[in-house]
Length: 61
Image (cartoon, rainbow, N blue to C red; front, side):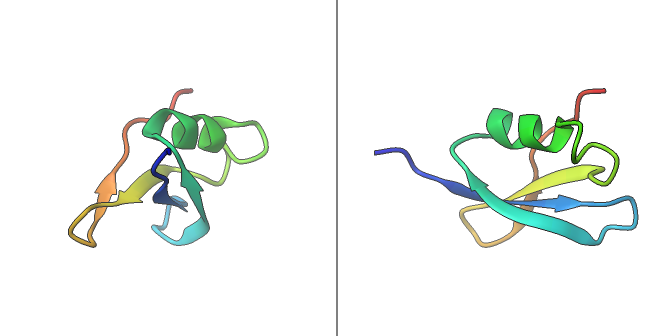
């Protein structure tokens, strides 16, 4: 069974533009880098085990 993590996608002002669940950082970052989302999303964070939001990694492009 695959564990899903909660991700949030932030714009340049730090406002949440979307929240979704993904199996890993790579899938979340790929979704954010998709042509449909790449203009709005500037940062991707995931909900850590202690209930805090953590940086998921750099966006490509």
